[in-house]
Image (cartoon, rainbow, N blue to C red; front, side):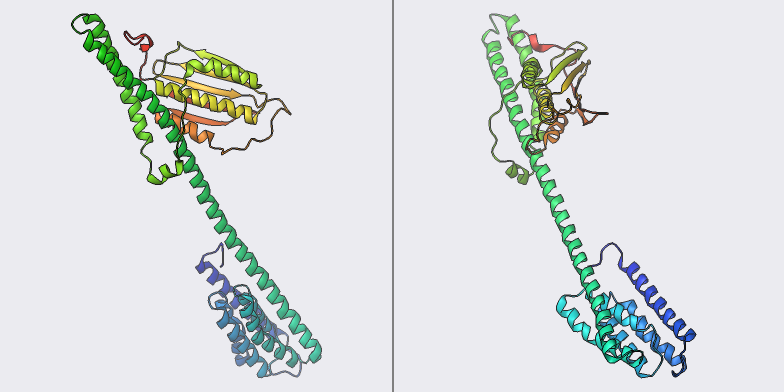
Length: 403
């Protein structure tokens, strides 16, 4: 039940303690020699070592250490040598046993400890038997109290470590569950996008077949639309298959999904209007020529901006928010930044799972983009992400035959 030290280090510490206590006892007995006591000879030194050196085993075999120290102290006292500090070896051995054994065991161990210490104190003839008994009970009782307290502290530390481990496992499971739910929700949205593309393929293919002989120009335009839509469908299918590569346990954890809609960045003004009515001050800034994203990526961008604005409304209250859309030839960089809100306008904490950032990151990962989020100095928060646009400079929103 020892925590924080390796067994080898604990053994070295115990050996150093045993040797040091023995050296102190021998040095004291040699320097302090009252009249009427035998000379402190070699046998006395050996018995002093027997009463203290077993402390080196106090954590490995506490019973052995206690019995050996008590036997050594009793033999030293019975040999008639002068009182010394050898009594503390038995007291420390009893303390060590009480620190690692239950109450019944430590109560049993108190018998040899009390007997050896009482015998030593009485034979010292310094005080009466009554006072000697009271001193013995006090010293051994304090050793038991301190040992029992240490044992309780160690047990609490072990329980706390176990609870911490369980909490970490539970938090990891919750995070995994949140990721799975978000992946399945994105997969449902991608399913709607793919289904739309397949419907376009079917309609345009039928049109091309119908007018192939009578109107070659319209048939060619329809086939161009089929080619373009098929390429988009393949891109969305790759993302959908990547999302569906989850374990069976994750799928079971996610539960049964419900329906969802599929907006895009073209509906960003409506979202800004709703958030303005709710209390936010939202400004939108666009850099570069606006280029339409593929439907799946467009939906991804809208959902992240929506989640970011919702988080501002929850945590910052009446804040000022800036949404930046920076278009380039091959990607779009979107930033949602707020100022932290006015002092006193922050609402009460809103209950929730706290997995919004996980969902944002998962969405961006599906499309091979980058994502970052974090607080700003001196106040505010920023969500920043980029999404590649495989369409590049091609604007297929007005592709022939798709209208």
